[in-house]
Length: 637
Image 1: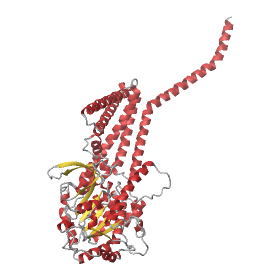
Image 2 (image 1 turned 90 degrees about the vertical axis):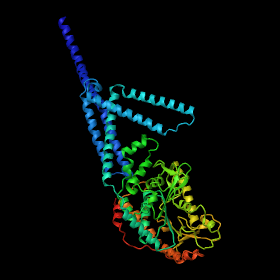
Image 3 (image 1 turned 180 degrees about the horizontal axis):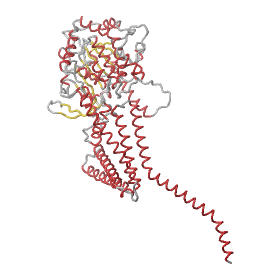
Image 4 (image 1 turned 120 degrees about the vertical axis):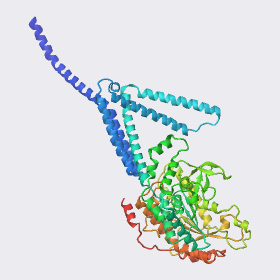
């Protein structure tokens, strides 16, 4: 019997041995994979955090390249962020691996990571609440105000309680929050260090203001040019169009000043206000060209951690448009006000946000306003900047009232309407001399108007494919925008100018145009004083043949809000100079004709138009520009 049982046990052992071996092997495999899964789960926050940092850097660099806003400071921020995030995440990972039991309680340094993360997350939440409080429209009635704050407080407190419950719900959640805190902390530290270094360097190196004596010399030279044409008055209008417009206008002013064309009035909009105010302060176009080509750092100012922080959670009076003004103050204008502008008379056009009406910063009751604030108001493009708040004197002259302004180009981008309103006196010349017995025009009225139009080139209206509704909506606003321009051009040129008019080959130029002031001012005077108008726009179809071989097409595509490279600035200047030189002989012809008439009333302006239109250059002189090398660099980049 005993032998029988031994034999049966042997048979059973032989039968179960493979099963036991397979079980042990399966268990070993299970334990192995389970350990690997636990290790992966423990490392998953580290892997996801590293991935998040990489994604953030790719997005940052991609946007920077697309908008061309990468600078040594932004690149330094990217490098610092990557290094600090890597070091922090590696340190946190090592602390978690050393843990034996509850990872968030047993290892002090891991617990510290958790506490820092909690603090950062809670502070971020509270800052978000403050941001909403500053920007949510609050009801005006007392009962509605009380109900609003009760509901808002309940939501804010409830959100904070829910947030605390989530981030303290066990080790896994706390570990995830610790990784988020490390990434967020590295971001803040890198951003702070890059911003501080930018501030320190610019405090030492940025000094673009010329001496008062050099400014006086430039102004004296301009007065001398005006003395060459006694009794003749010239106005120049500089359109909006961002930095693209500023570079083109710099070329136009350089050409006009090079031929000693006197400028008495300068009406500017948006991008034209930057160069216009800088020029009117007494600086030369060459000085502006050199300064703009260095990329003075608007992007750095806008993304400075202090400026972003005060704009996000500061009072409503702190806006990115104030940073815009601070940039102009630091780089271009210092603390100069409109009272420091003497020659030419500066007219800065903006749009009053409350009623969308034209507002003009000019000599008079706005003399004490800083140029930086006026130019920022003129260029506060909606969507890119918030409305600019400026303290404007009230009609009584004793009190100031804060008003909000947006880009002057929103209502009219040429500067013509503002110039017209400024020149239109409270009592027209016909009322001081109803019958115009003197036979002369009112002193101060321009005889010649030069319009430098650097607006964006029109889109081809032919629809080749289905377009997004947002694109069509944008085109709808552009249509009304262009319609107003055409109306103003018809008014100032006696219905003779169209931006895309086709010129007959070999026919004389239609410029200059002329218009009577009685039509401009809607005055019923039997006598007329005339305004001769030149329109300079090298991007139109009418000028395409003359501008062939210049970078006009490339310049028309420049982004309005992007600071330009040195080569791009040179391209814009070349376009401005080229189109101005086409009409310089005709401009001088008109000035000499009016000078010869001793500024008496002109009976036949058409004779002057016909004689001077023959002076307009038909073919461009092939002269090598001083900026050719810079233009080559721009094309290469």
